[in-house]
Image 1 (cartoon, helix red, strand yellow):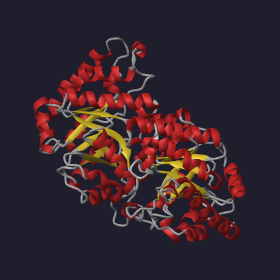
Image 2: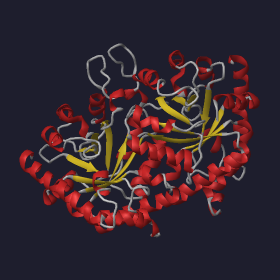
Image 3: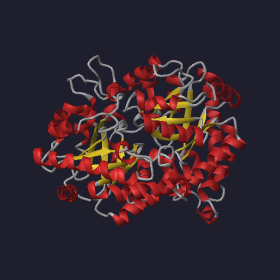
Image 4: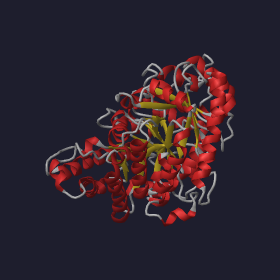
Length: 274
Length: 274
């Protein structure tokens, strides 16, 4: 999927919402546990309920891997379901991988060849040769961690170098030379607020994947004020706030409502800042 | 497994070798492809052939995930096999995970509860709350990336802060406060040679997991000269040099020979530096 494809979806749906499929057997409605594949059943309902209001789905691998074989199967089926029913949706594997070259190649093959995902999140600590193998696939995306939404982001990401440049800024500056803005996006947490301005000074044109709205307390308005560019340039993720809006048999309707609510907010913000 | 347990194994076997199970269907002897589960068959033979000469096994998750469901199954069976037949071996999941707290919790559950691994490699970029969830399991280990063996380690890990401290040094200094040397180890690449001295200034007592000997060109002698401590403090990994020593039907005998050769070198180095 190209940048233009993504922007067209955003305009069409008036939404830049990404729905995070962090599916946890302990949190899904308990009546689903009687189904043959509860994770997949839950995901299918959530996908159908929210697809009209979002442009991307982001399953987080951890939630699937923690269920072992069953989880891995549910993950593959979920990806195939989205691919078939909603081919216009961007599918992001939130995996935060990153290893030496030959190993990253295996991960890239896994995500882009085996599973036909559109994008994968990658960690920057090991540098260029750990990221490059993910960049050999046309219309596939690397989403590199730059400034994360969690408290621990302050441990290393803000470390200033001898020139006063913070580590997340160095990550942006160095890594944007590895690929174009047609192949790479960056993770910037919604909780970082006004810092989106500093990010945009370095990567004005790139798409940013923005977690941290909702359960983590980031402000959608701030993200847009400081982060939106001419092609929107934002994919804002919400996971728990949508998929666990309700744990009764009406969970899908309520996920639909929550996604719709966010989409309406996004429409207003697109009118205001685009 | 405690630090003392690991040291006792090292003394008993006169070896601090970790065998990396980076099992790739394209590289294993082709006659194994007729077997029902070629990855598992290969691993079992390699494990039996090398167990006398090593103290740890390190399957790299990427190689298993790239085979999808089959790979995941082969991984689980491999771990169970080592656990049952060679309970004295440390089993490290080379996964390089690291995510926000609730997600890291899922990974920790996956590796330590579901699979009963002893250790998992974790990336530091997201800071303390991404690592802490892995630390809640007694006698289980977090192995944090500090100074990796690849060329890309130079992109960010050597960035000096305002006080002249390099990022890998800051990672060591900050993270060693998160846990004791009974819960945490660090990855330091064999290719970094004399830098082991600088690492040891900060973490004199910790075990280090050392990739990069063999195919990547690191020197075992240098690693020991600059990195060994009173409890050895080193687990040196070799993957390709052992498991792909030979691709004929004699692959296991040749893996055995290569492991034995490294063990003999290690015995000499233990005599010299311990």
